[in-house]
Length: 594
Image (cartoon, rainbow, N blue to C red; front, side, top):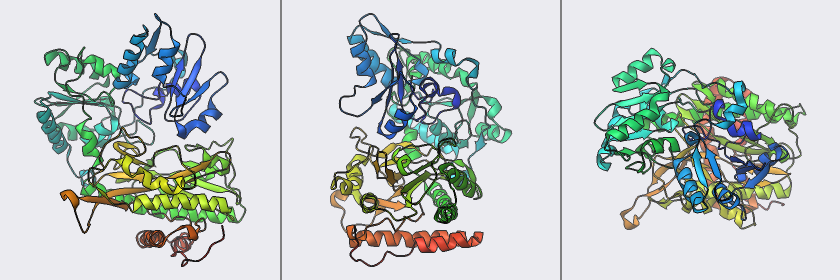
């Protein structure tokens, strides 16, 4: 039982949260396995070890993915089950690549893989299972999108021509939204519509969606772009019919097995898809155009102004001993963002963790158990918003009292890693894993590290996590970083039971003007989009070199220049005073006690 919906989304509609219903674990990544012999196991990665340990009920075993000695789901099933037994899956919610690999591994052991017509979790869930989402779709303005849906469809058909493919199956919800310049509210925190698109090279493009979600202006825009509309439930049959009409055995259909569900793959027949490469939309969406970048920059300026107001108020409240809970922080940060032009929703559930809760990488505060903020430990705030013109995601770590020497050293090493990556220059064609070590080196030098990637892609007024680019020590992802891509820069350090530290900015990849161009290559670097001060009192100046001090001073000068006018326009005197103090240059280099 995976986390996924039929579109393999990171965040899924409530009706597809089967793993959370079954296990009680609410993290966004994980797979549950339940056997007839009474075993119940939950696999998840290092971001969620502490959360899973807290949430899993008695009788469940946590399997720590990526930790030496922990078998994968596939290996555990193959080694545990006996010849003649079977593993059941819902083919609509597993990646085709996973299911194919599992089938081969089980076959070696004489174990069958069976695709179930009905998901057995739904039978247990019964009438309490939420219905399919029904939020209306809306048009994404072309002035922000930068290209029309018709232009994007023409670009896809040009790629189909190159691959000699008859059709492309688009199943990822953010790709559907990007391609047709539509947005929606079917998934909390991600402005997408539950839908598939089938783009034919010499035929129509068809959107499979609940037509009741389409207002007249959306229907008219789709028709104008040459897009037909059919019911959501007809997508699988349409793919099968197209494949059969294309000569059988999979026809000439383009479908990426790692990003499409197994049911779609099986609909193409025994040979599967003719083209198995990543969707051309993945790269098109990842490399932002001028209009998309302008929208992202504008959204980040407003977001910075909102956070200046929120953080000014938060610091004043805690330092005057008013009771502020982690949930209160979430409410206030959401309130100030909602007052900004173009706000639609948060881009993910706010992570507000004080003290030991900050060490839970994807912590979610609940009213019944939320901690009160104080002045004796660190506070980690990771939050973001969806605006009409952009998506934000920022993490800051703060201390409202007097930090210890250990806290300041750990914070400064995280900051050094953040600056090292943000100021890096590298040749075009470089994959993200190559630059991941820039952010980790200052931590490694002290025997420290963190159990998550350093950076993920971010959509333009779309998903806060998008691919194919990432910055992480996952050597299998060789996607090159390209100018126009947006990535996060978020090294951290987490001391279980004590505190968490993370510093996150979103960065846009830009071309660098280098004095030389070895190999006739372009050289690239990063430009910050996020405009929020980094707390100066947590920094050990003696651990920073002159270039690092200069970088941070320049960053804070830019924050002041771009955000202060919006704060002054709002007439918030407290936020203005806080922003001015928070963006002062660092004291000139001097010895600082540890």
